[in-house]
Every structure is written in C-alpha cells, then in structure tokens.
Length: 178
Image 1 (spheres, rainbow, N blue to C red):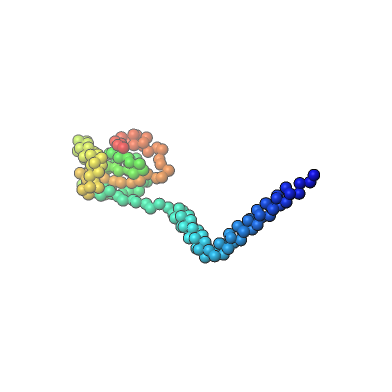
Image 2: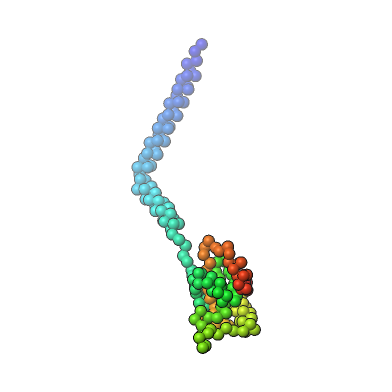
C-alpha cells in the first residue's frame, strides 16, 4: 500500500518550514529597512574608531629626552671621542643612557695654554661624590651635582647598541657603574 497520509504530513511540514523561513526573511528585511540609519551610523562609528587606532598605531612614541639637571648633553660620537682621548673618568650606564664624569671639562679653563687636570686623589674624590649623586639621583632632585657641571656629561647610546663599548671603557681605564 501507498502511504499517502505520510507524504501529505511531510509536505505540510515542509511547507510550514519554508513559510516560516520566508516570514523570518521578511521580518529581517523589515528590521533592516526600519533600522537602516541606526545600523549605518553604528557601522560608520565603528569604522572611524578602527581607523583612528590604525593611524595612531603608526605614529612613533613620544620621546622624553630630558637631560638631568647639572649635566651637559653631548652627542654619542663626541662621547666616544672623549673616551678614546682618555678624558672620561667614570660612566654610569642605565639602559641606553650614559652619564659620564670627565677628567677635564669640555671647555677647559686654560692656565698658560694647558688644561687644568685634577690630581689622582682629587679625581678619586670627585668620582666617589659623583657616583653617590648619580645613584641617589640628587642631580634631578636638587639640580646640582657635587662636581663641576661642565665635567658631568649625559648622552644616549644608539638604539642598535654598541658591542665595543664595554671593551672601550676597559681599555681606557674608565670606571663603570650600572
């Protein structure tokens, strides 16, 4: 026997499902037409936020290059020149920042055509006082260092670094603190 009743029930269920899909489609289309302006506004706001993040993500970070008070800023190449000349007595390394103490100032006071070089005892005392001030950060708090500001220098190492820097310090008898 042919079960026509089963086929009829199946076709009615199929018809109901296809009608309910059509109803859902019509309801979705009506919702989209009614809320078109709201959805467009929300989409444009989301797009503008994403674009702002993309633009600001491409900008370089701000550079806060503040020279500590009581120090003279010099270029890295001038610093290396001073180290090679044997004029740097001590260096404090903090990341890529280098604080240095010169044996004689960059603009030396001339006495009969020669720069005044402190004796070893005075230089050791200056290094000790300068080292305490750098460790305690007194140059940024009080604005003064216990040594002449023309002898206290500040520079920054290049971002790529300098692999030869420590060996350069050691070969020129520079006291290094970190």
